[in-house]
Amino acid sequence: MINIDIVCPLFNAGKYIDGLIENIKKQEGVLVDNVVFALTDGGDASVVKEKIKAAGFFYFSVTPEKFSHSLTRQKAIFDYCKNDIVVMISQDVNLLNSNAFYELVKNVNDKVVYVYGKQICKKKTIEYYIRKKNYGNNTEFVGAKDIDSLQLKAFFASDAFSAYYRPVFIKLNGYDNNHMMMNEDMYYAKKILEAGYQKGYIATAVVEHSHKFKLRQLYKRYYQTGIWFKQHPEFDNYKTTDTGMKLALYVLGQAVKHFNIPVLFRWLPDMAARYLGLKKGRKAVKYN
Image 1 (cartoon, rainbow, N blue to C red):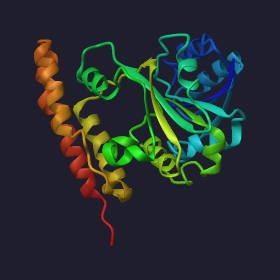
Image 2 (image 1 turned 90 degrees about the horizontal axis):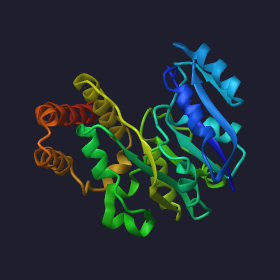
Image 3 (image 1 turned 90 degrees about the vertical axis):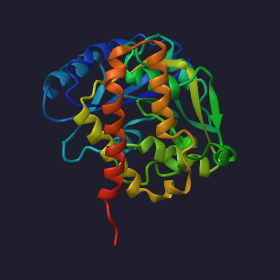
């Protein structure tokens, strides 16, 4: 039995909280000592609070103005977790199997200090094909020696379903107190590889995780991603080995192969929203 803590940020989580609590409680092979929900105030927070209390779990409140994907998670791990292994999940993740946590955390130790699991979509949307490309069937471990060959891909990670080795997270000062609204996982993956540790992708730890973005939402998401990369120029030193064009063509090829008419109609505006959003975001931030 592996002792773990769980951290999960919540916002307007009323439609997720029941399933989330049920899925956490049904996990086998791990002993969940502490579930820490970082609950952003507003919306249906009062209802969610009552359900968390009834389940015997813990939450701390965050104002919308102070919520941060990096700092809120860092606070949860620093201040409220106790075990060496901390599992990170998103509120909209569906734990399909009762061994999802165990498959993920059994790979975490003082050398492999960060791992993330496989994410799948059930509906054959564009996201389905993208996840199929990004989350393969083989478990892989990456160290500093692999950066030259993998380039930017070496730092790919996802806190939607991940696990941290807490002693090293504390030793390395987490996310360095940087406020980030995305890609804190990628930032940390780079830190640990450069510090001589390893990260792992665990293909046997599977969750369902999907979004349904409108084109405007998709554009905004990639616009924010472009801003993030502009704010973190240290990533400019690495090449993109799997280019956006390659991914776009892969999705198109899969859609043609499966004669997926909805994806074929959506493909061009979807890819354009991603490309233009990223490009505009990179240009939005200027430094003196």
